[in-house]
Image (cartoon, rainbow, N blue to C red; front, top):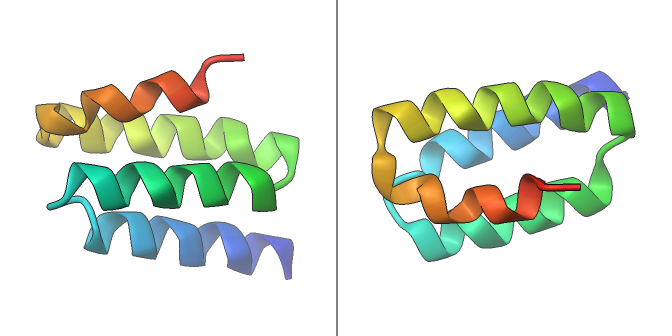
Length: 65
């Protein structure tokens, strides 16, 4: 079930990547909802999205420990 939540989160982040405010809110929700090892995988995914859309760079502050 946890794996399904990670995949769902990735889908949502992909869909809202056009709006940085909404993207940041979804990142915050994901960090509260996912397990620590899933968050590490999510960080990699988010960094690949940031490379495609540099405007999302401001949301990386939520991924810092």
